[in-house]
Amino acid sequence: MQIARSKDELRAALAPLRGAGKVVLVPTMGALHEGHATLLRQARQLAGDGTVVASVFLNPVQFNDAHDLAAYPRTPEDDVETCRRNGVDVLFMPTPDEMYCADRTITLEETHLSTVLCGASRPGHFAGVCLVVDKLFNLVQPTDAIFGKKDYQQLAILRRMVRDLDIPVTLHGAEIVRGEDGLALSSRNARLTPEFRAAAPSIHRFLTEARADYAQGAPAAEVAAAVRRKLEAIPGVRVDYAELVDAETLHELADEKRLALLAVAAWFGDVRLIDNIELSRA
Ligand code: AMP
Image (cartoon, rainbow, N blue to C red):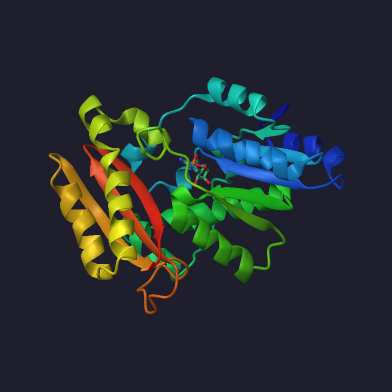
């Protein structure tokens, strides 16, 4: 595995590998866990004899909260090992100064899907995501890229970006990887207190119960309200949103024959966790 810390090193590492099959990119912010490792293995399988590129870059532009950025876990040495063990050919690990010009003036904002759910409570977050992913696409020029459905809204927005800007990359959505207790793996889980860590698997339990209720005909608004109520009953938990929406438009579900998404964000102490589940009528 080659490690590129600058854009020039990345271009030099990739130049001899281009044109020999797929180039599959997996962007991450580091503090890699088994969810990321699963995406890397899927990338390896998809690439075959081609090339797997991973990026580990804690993108400051997508953090609207300086405390969240400062507290975000960083494990660069372990991340290198995780990439090495899971079939990565080229690992791109730039600094923010390498990635961004100090006087940059271009922004990249999706204006419909970004207004709801996490976009409503994290202003500027998805513009930062679009900017960094578009830059990574330009630098790596992948044929394919893999993103997790854990960040369902992010994937939907990036699909829109690729479509609306005619970016020649095929996007793949990976299923959510969970611990045995059901908690969606996340770099932020490491910051939970023991009490909140013990309570956090209930998010997935409530979502699973909601899926069953929805399949049996419960009204959409009631299904979402029940999840909010159950989460708010946990001491110290504050719900940011619990909403049932159209899985593609992320806005109101106008037609219940379409795939629905129940998405949740909640503060467990000072850690904000997100999770979601796809729903349909039986
Ligand atoms: P992050 O480092 O949090 O930006 O995540 C990098 C990529 O890994 C994103 O596409 C995430 O959606 C994906 N990812 C993170 N956690 C999980 C998980 N538990 N299951 C599936 N994908 C995940």
